[in-house]
Length: 348
Ligand SMILES: Nc1ncnc2c1ncn2[C@@H]1O[C@H](COP(=O)(O)OP(=O)(O)OP(=O)(O)O)[C@@H](O)[C@H]1O
Image (tube, rainbow, N blue to C red; front, side):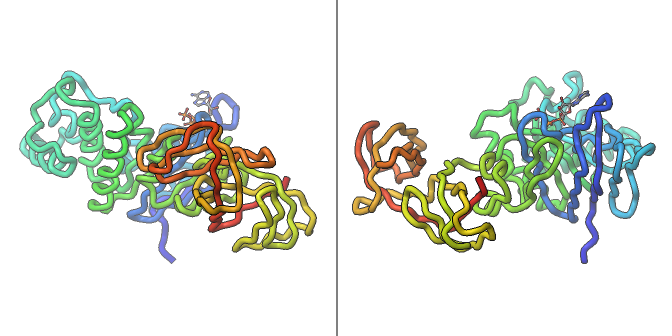
């Protein structure tokens, strides 16, 4: 089996005695991009700071390659870890030009070598010819590229990105996260990204660890987190959807107000158990001959699609994505059908 580049084994971190991260395991293989995604305060930054060496661990250990870099009572200093960091606020020096910023940590290599490395990094991040600009002469997206170039310049084994795009507008955020993913993949650099924005996590991560209250609840691909959430928190946090109540008739069949639904999974609870069924907006489709009558309660235009909140005849509210040319107003009656790929059910 491949040996992970980075391994966190049952780490615990405290701030002033209060536990922020508990019993957390994470392994990251060479070349992987892993995202930690979770609501504010769940401990994402604390994990990243522990990996970087700014935060000690109170229990467990962190290994980078075969070296133990953190364990209780020992924290290898950040500059000895060969780990690069990119922060939300860029943390660039305003009194230095772009080249100076990129090679700040490499000045011992001499002027000519610094210039060569800076030019190489500028090429990688797509800022050719901007080496002598000052930071205030760059856009937010360009500044974040400089921050990335600075983190890449010492050729780290691992790069940590803490909400790196959150100061940028949505369009730029999406573009840059795709670009940064491309750069890291092309350079074969392993990365860990922390974010509370699932779209950023979806765009960047090969795998995403969903965190809550100091724990990783599920680590999986974006597809599996959306379609096979392991628990109610992940189901709620990832994507949109509603839960409707139902009764389990057999391991793969649930009776709901929308009808009796059979799926591709077996659940082990007793027949007759009360359950909740997850319905994503893409599970309910527009169908002029569909069996379910609904009235439009709300609509949100998304461009190619419209997200409708629909009330079914029995008062159950569901969300549904219609292609944009099916344009209905609040109060209109529509007919829909179920198109469930995966039946996701939780106990009540
Ligand atoms: N220096 C500190 N002193 C005391 N408590 C702290 C400190 N830093 C973080 N905490 C607490 O630890 C918990 C985890 O914080 P952390 O910053 O890791 O969360 P986060 O998921 O990164 O949140 P955000 O997305 O808001 O940055 C929070 O309850 C926070 O209040």
